[in-house]
Image (cartoon, rainbow, N blue to C red; front, side):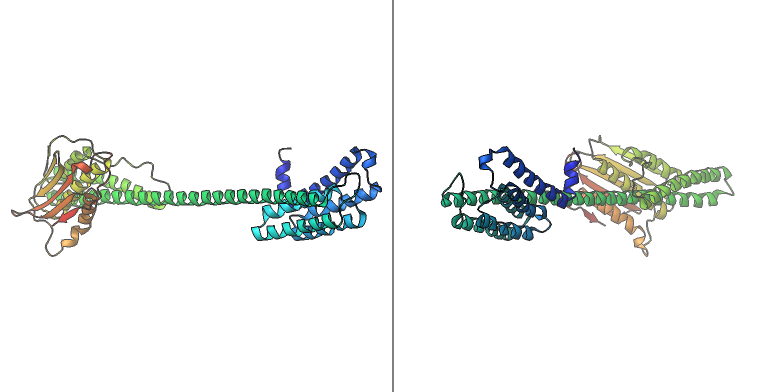
Length: 406
């Protein structure tokens, strides 16, 4: 029984035929239950006309205008026989409702007028006769009221269906937009992870290059130091391969790489300094002040600035020393990386251009200032100042862009 309504909705013609048959059977049952003095003079003929009057209901959705025309033709029965079956009135009500519920306002109004104006004319010209004689004016008003109610109910159902369809379309569009935003967020996150892994891989490759150069130079006079450098190259190469695999996983698949390690922060700067020191560049780390609560993006920014600056020092400084200074103040967070080397060659200033662009973007995201350039006494300096009022969790990213001073 629970599947019957769904079955009928899938077969509208079958449902309408059963509806018409039900109207005809209802007429038969109603007639047989009334006293004999109220029966029509020719009962079988009258019941046959009832079936004929209910027939337009069977095609009310498949051929609605045909059903309206057929229903109007049945109005000849009162003029010819002086008898109007009850199924005829119900058919007019059903057809008025159907046109109003399933058609636009203009064809619905035309169908209602085509149905009920002839009814009013028949009630005036050939009023029914029998036991109950009713004033024609009353019949006209009653039928017009029934037609108006049927039309109003149909329009209400039409409006409800239109509203429901609009809500469904809205929900579909909203779901599509949400899916698009989610896909965009995933794509943005994958690009961010790829950029982070690129920085890590570039740093490891730079370290391996410096270590390989050092090992080749000391191989003849200090095999033990060369062996230690080669072991470090071996470990670093394995780490680089792991990061490369992660990078390829991010770029090839739609799923985020589950095995990615957490993003580094302030705690990773000490191990980063130690790694660079092992690569052959003496580095000292000084920290002033106490780090307060900072966003994860801020700590990652500080780490990447130190990593990029030390990587550039390994590439371009030559025999030199470096110093990393972190100062946590009440007003700003200052990061400074200096070295005593020769720095990048003047004839190829773009060798570290991409790294500087990345640092500018990171610092500018938090409304900070980045300064890079040669030191007056020799060497190279990278300095970043981040305002503390924009770095605490819950503050959000600064709305103003940072400045870069070369």
